[in-house]
Length: 261
Image (cartoon, rainbow, N blue to C red):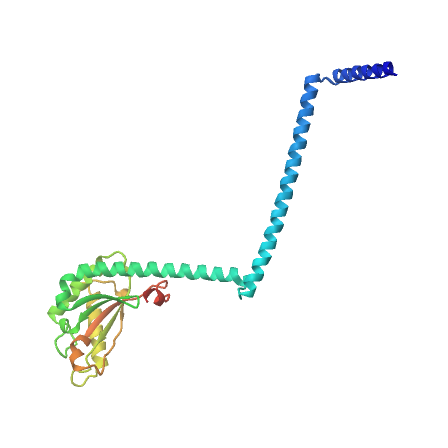
């Protein structure tokens, strides 16, 4: 029996040797094939284990999300519309940033105009930004003689100096201004305050677009008139004024009340 087993193993070894030799593999090459196969089996097992871990983690995460949804629902948080609310907030933030940028640019223009017109402050010229509107304010007494509707010589000279920075600024020279005059409620005989305010506004606008006067482009002037009837006597001098108001562009017409406040 022992001899038969020895004969069998010897024959098997011989057969394996012949088979290896017949396939072109040496023993060393065959061993390497076996090692590579074992390495692949180990790698596959590791990947299978990693997938099982990921699956468990995903299940835990889903359970946690479900728990959080339930908690938020109990607190009145509607996750179904959370995305829409976030998009709305993002749009509102973008609009706010745009308005803030516009207001910053407006204030920069105001500062440049204040600096350019600073020498005229003593003559009643001021630059203001109120409710996101830039305006150049001039006392009417510096432009017109009492009860008159035509510019005085000094008034014409003053308007020409006010128009200078508007004409030379690359952006402001392309913008429209509205002329608004305010009276003291004491017009000339035979005229009401509105009529006098209108005539004075027209006189100012005409001079501003005159080539010998302000030299501004005609299409940039929009004539308007206002009145401050019933003002207190002590405020009459301050009430009589003209405002050159910068007309907002289409983008600037967006409400900036929230930014200004």
